[in-house]
Amino acid sequence: MFRFEDSTYLYILFIIPVLIALYYLSNWHKKRRMAKYGEWNLLKQLMIDYSSYRPDVKFWLVCVALALVIVMLARPQFGSKMDTVKRSGIEAMICMDISNSMMAEDVSPNRLERAKMIVSKLVDNMDNDKVGLVLFAGDAFTQLPMTADYVSAKMFLDGANPSLINLQGTDIKKAINIASGSFSKNDKVGRAIILITDGEDNEGGAIEAAREAQKKGINIYILGIGDASGARIPDGNGGYMTDHSGNTVITRLNEEMCRQIAQSGKGKYIHVDNSNSAQNELNAEISKLAKSEMESTIYSEYDEQFQAFALLVLVLFVVDICVLEKKNPLSKKFKLFSK
Image (spheres, rainbow, N blue to C red):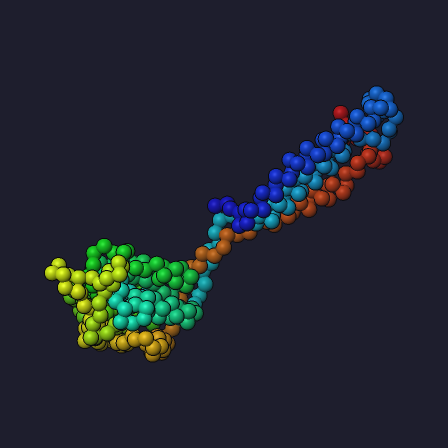
């Protein structure tokens, strides 16, 4: 695929038609002045070294060269450059709960935003690792497959919100199963599922899913976010969510469930509050995982194509220097630029 990185420079090409118009206007005025001295064909016979075509050739060479320089400034690029690099790191799948209960404000600013902050800092600390993102509520899906592109990871993370899944609830089992199938076949690399939730598992089966994941060599770390005493869920309209009976919904952190899942997954349960202790503890646990060499395919910037244009510009300028405005005595007999 062909593109220009800085296509704004292409607007400068409009100067070319202006230069052409000015050039031919200047030639017209010159011929009018010369006509005062006699008939044009007769005057040309008197000017032995005059060439009516060489100046035009030189002008067009300069115009084309100028156009190519402008194209070079716009940075023409073709295709995408794909590099395969070897990294020594771990693989981590982030499973983030985006159910409505994650909007509770028992941690600042709310559970979901606090979770995003923790994951964002975790990604910032990554170097040669791979990371992926699974979002879940009453359903679950892969938002970002395993990748070493941390910019994309943070971009998808920022966009996580409850509106991405219509089915509300908390299906931790499905999130773990989807994450478990996202790892590479390299059994020497440290693998981790980092599950961030308030532990209100509505579907069941999460503990069994954690055991199955651990059999594959995947450790599961649970970040339990919220307060066990409970909190109300904002409804986005200045009030709080209520059930069918009109009672205010209270969401509570289920720490016991979180601990059981972490234990089954041979990982660790970490409670998230308003301090940085959870962040530090998570970083310490992740650093213990075995790092292994793995290949990553990186899609980087497009290949620059300005070199070809630069070569053409150089050739045109050399030709322009070689072509004189008047006839060359050594090449008069060839008459390359005359009828």
